[in-house]
Length: 562
Image (cartoon, rainbow, N blue to C red; front, top):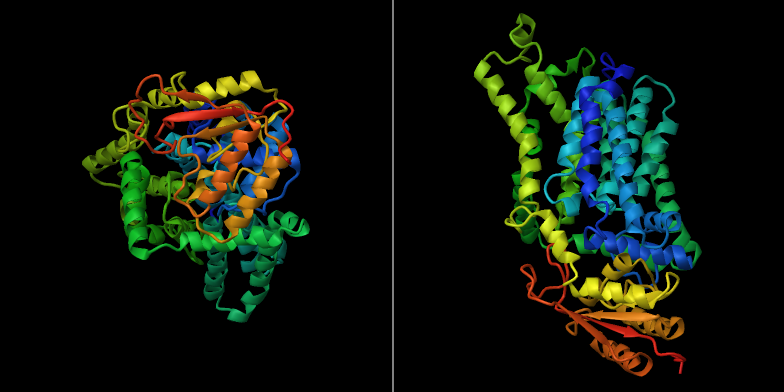
């Protein structure tokens, strides 16, 4: 590894300090927003339920995410209080800062201090660009990045020790462990395990040792992975929910990600085009990464290409492959790519601008002779930083909502005209903080009202309504029993909250019967005027709300078990 530049001064670098300031400054305006997208609301809703009831990931969950993010949000709910999104958003800023520090600390071992600090600045900007409500919440991709960086650091240490003929098992185990934890949060990011294995294979070829020498590090890597996997799935197995947990967190996820190839190629390519509009520098450096055959040449030492750089180098296509496999990739799916691309992009820029005009630079091919080319590079860097920031300030929704600012979008979502906001205000006035509520068809109101779901919210969510998995029938019946037993103080039914297009419409009728028998007649909240955004869809990220929301309050003295 190249440690020639590594000194303690990196944390006083202007690039590093600016990266910290930008990370905080760009995210502060969103701290007070009730929630940034449905993923965040879903994670908090189910996490609060786990924290309050001691439930484990499993029975009736019906989602393809692993248990890791839900347990993480359960801890946040314990620490900050049920569904306290203000606390979560403040914590998210600290989490982003710690991730940035970890990125710089790991990448300095690979590209040196200057490029690591500049790479941190790249990451602080381009991890925010594109769609903020998609990129900055504590979603599953955000949670995997520090684990991915920690695993890369452990793998680098293991590669160094193994190449030197020293014991590397401890470091290799930690690399596998981190990947097992990642797999329990977001499966496709776990492709890092293959990158680690490839790195050891490449070292074996370079050393000229037999492939049998790989058995030991591969075995340790695999054991670490299984331990990390067991940490997150073990509680479900212990509680007798292992079958459902493995089905939804593993098997169903792969089936969900395995859509048609043609649609996947189209969607992935269109998403890349949208990302390009917000991140020209970082994706320009991706082009540089593909074509820069001179980069490996300039980075060669007498012993060959540095193993650390190759690990970062291979992680970029590895994580791009993971995002492609996911198919429906949002912007946050590319955060692991950006984390490893940023230091390489920074070094790429540093290589182009180093030793300008000197005989050493021109002889090595590292410098740029032409002033016009240097000026063009400066314009590219300036455009790369200014475009996402200006584009975000003026057009935060990119191509999707090109004429409204993000403040207008969130103002519309949480305005007093929005039926969700009206319903939330009413529920807060009618319930105590310890009261449980139930939303049919979503998770939004748990975060908005800061109340815990009365029963497992997953089966009755919008996501489950569109699935025809045979397990869902039994889940619906179990939730009906839970509903009778737990007696939610309030039940909320938004427009289209329980769609009749799925195979469980008759059970929705049973829920309607319960509402008629045990709850007061609904109070309906509607838009006071037609929203400029509302288009009749469910309340998704760029869609502020349903046409109406019905709120049912439990009748006094009602016995739902009758």
